[in-house]
Amino acid sequence: MPMIIVSCIALALVLWLATEPLLIELRRRRLRARPFPAEWREVLRRRVPYFRAMPADLQLQLKRHMQVFLAEKSFIGCAGLEVTDEMRLTIAAQACLLLLNRRAGYYPKLRQILLYPGAFIVDRVHTDNIGVLQDQRQVLAGESWSHGQIVLSWDDAVDGAAVADDGRNVVIHEFAHQLDQEKGGANGAPYLPHRRRYKRWARVFNAAFARLQEQADTQQPSLFSYYGATNPAEFFAVASEVFFEQAHVMAEQYPELYRELSEFYRINPLSWS
Image (cartoon, rainbow, N blue to C red):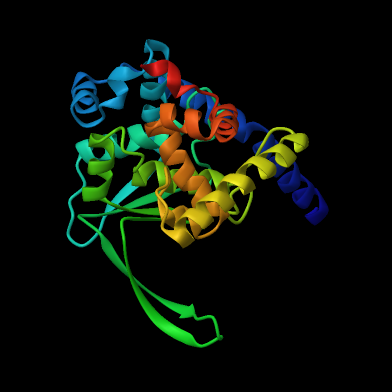
């Protein structure tokens, strides 16, 4: 009898593992089929100016992705912040921008978005170049954690959405980290569909990253924030910001990098204007 019970439990588990993805997709289809509320459209028009520049088919995709994202991810206000629908929608629109035309996994490792009113303080232990541990206090606008959370400053999130052509967007930055973290630790090489793509990706990204490091060391003007010179993971996130917000400049100055990001995100922002 115990063996029969164990076998039944094992069979039930196998059936559940086999059917769970189907059930999730059915639920998501129902969410995507719902009418998009008029008040939500008003928030998009007012808070997310790039939405108006997008082709109609991508606008529709974005709204459908937002409906799933908002149903599956929880928002938690920090430091006394009361999270409103306008906050959730503004952040969801920017996060779902990275999912267009892709097999949307809706950031499978992400469960919660922690939202602060403004920049938040993080205390960390830092090892200097001679191996001495030092307490370090950082003021941050956003942070992506590998164990299911993103932390954002609402002030910075709304500013990033409002100015859609400055190449600076904390929501795009942190959600790019989430894509990079889907296969494990962030290293600037997110999941690519074919192994041969990694060789080309590494060549193009390493060259652009080295160029930024040199610009940062010598204080030369750069298309990218010097923060992207910190490590390859930060460069991928910074480059993603610029790809979505300054596509024309990136395509002119870094054509190979633009091509790699266009193939990865499966969109061409050059065609939006």
